[in-house]
Length: 103
Length: 103
Image (cartoon, rainbow over all chains, first blue to last red; front, side, top):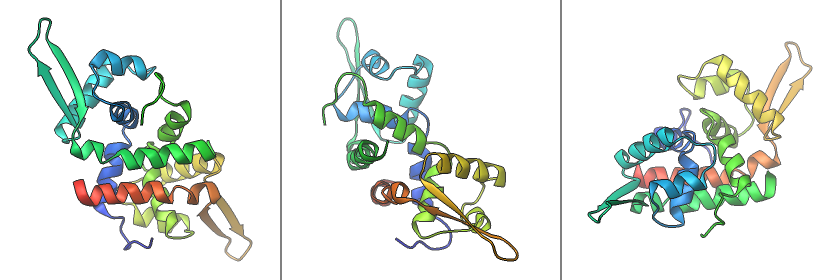
């Protein structure tokens, strides 16, 4: 997989996005289906609510996560992967396969 | 891809390792073949030598990178991916594919 001398800028920006602390785990948790904030916070130990909220905002602005507000009483807010986010499943599967064999 | 309630610890530690800033790009550059320190530093813009050296030490201790010293004059030191490191190629390819389509 020979690359030109400089690393592919798209790869670089994708990896920079994905390599932010907690991002991979948040995406992994949403691959199993839409979640509310508290559900995600419970699944990913050691991550602060402030960090989860920051990462969700970033992922929303990147078009990877979609936030839906259900006007119920009380209001229900759910986070789900967009098509762009769901397309990350194979990346996550490959990380999982590597982890099972090598970690 | 349903997971038990807590995220798989192996996935978590693999993603935490891979998501350190610059690590993905260093692995990507070594997938194209063994490199000397200066060659890697030139390929990955904006990364300090101190950071590259720190990451290489971590990757060595994780068994992902192998450092070989050739007793020539002057001494030649090369970094290459181990079998464990080379096994990351599919992860990198999936990131590249996703990046080309979505970034």
